[in-house]
Image 1 (cartoon, rainbow, N blue to C red):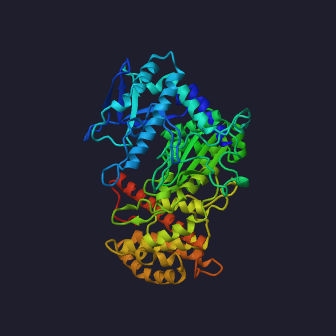
Image 2 (cartoon, rainbow, N blue to C red; image 1 turned 90 degrees about the vertical axis):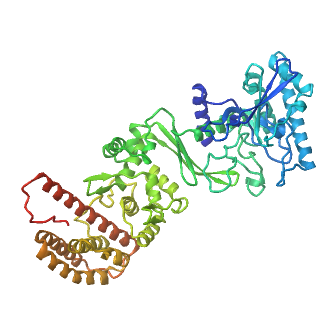
Image 3 (cartoon, one colour; image 1 turned 60 degrees about the vertical axis):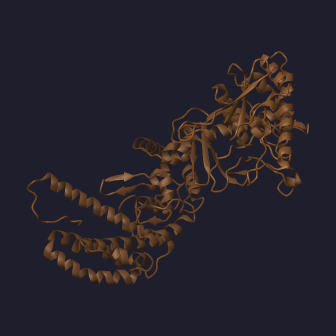
Length: 601
């Protein structure tokens, strides 16, 4: 199914002129060997960017095929200086051994044979005639090798008039035939599982995924989408593509399309250890980008679509256009398909709308709802650096970002490991902010797939009688009382007792409730309006707790701890909203008296 969808992408890209020739991919070219018209001389031009400049290196679509083994074959026209000019690899001491020199000569001989094979296949091509004369006349041996060139530098052939020889139609045809012969060497023919037609089948996928296309913390290298080179890995001990029959045309086009998608910036999302590419069967709006760059306009459209068709099946009927998303990781030289999604576009809109609805948080100061980028949510699961005022890069659990992405695209539950890890980080960092509150809402939702099931409210919920939620609200009110009575205090009860209160609230809340009487007495003397507002709020909070079967819980479960943090943060957001409204009212009325003070101070 995946290869079929990729060949569809290749067909559209080919029609738009975006698909490179078969077995071609972008290469950086450091040197250009310009051959004269009669093939008697050649000049080697240095095309490397000058040091200290911001010039970009020369890059062209050039012949490429994955090669390995003890005798890796050459590429047509464009290859390393080891193949073109017999530049030997040097050791750590800067000198080339005899074995390295002989290997360079062997590779140059293979490169020469490949050039002559192309030249003989195009007898009427004047460019082929000049190359044949140059090679047979020993021209490659006469090219002076300049200082500074290395065996790994790429050298491309150019005609006297500036024509890139590897871009000639005859070169395209010859190179495709060469790769086809290498990769279909077994001569087996049969039914291709991708196109459903009979043809010559591949031994191995001819093109690899380009190095750097898949993020990795290790050494970047080309990787294979399908690679079975050990009997223990294949079904029935079969190697390579025996159990995955793919014809040469489908194999080459599928990989060309995948590399094209991985090279784009519009249909690609790179994480810390995975990359996701997406496409649609028919042109569609760029909804996928809203996950990392949510705008009010995009989110509003998605939420409207969700409210119009809360049932994913109903949304699918309205827009059945297909949407595909592929997530790839890397394991040494093999690509790992971490996720593959094939759903109607209407259902995707429903899922994205639910994603934003289920994690939105209320900002009391701005009196608005915030929708967080997915990358910010993933970052907030890492460690908070209080001195730097930011989350520490790469401190989030490995793979968690990809799991959140899967939940967003499929409307699935939050990862099981998210909640305990997040609570541990909140307790250690003493940091509760919008991204972490949003993650708590996601993790506490009982069933994200059922549109009739409501999860935690995005703002303060006066009807919520969860024990942890009520305890969190009470703790926030106690902290607000302390801040109002002692505005210059350095260490608040939140700094001292938050971690303990979210685990074992009974003893903490009881003691703090008794200690708040002194603060309320001070407020009654200095800020009567604030005193009455906070005293009433505190009484309501503890009255709600008193109605619980067992009063203040002694210990909280994992879910109850999350409810505690959510109640604490939503109570603070409501207080901020009240404070902002009071401040706005004071600024708008020049005759506002000194009393009563800000009721949420």
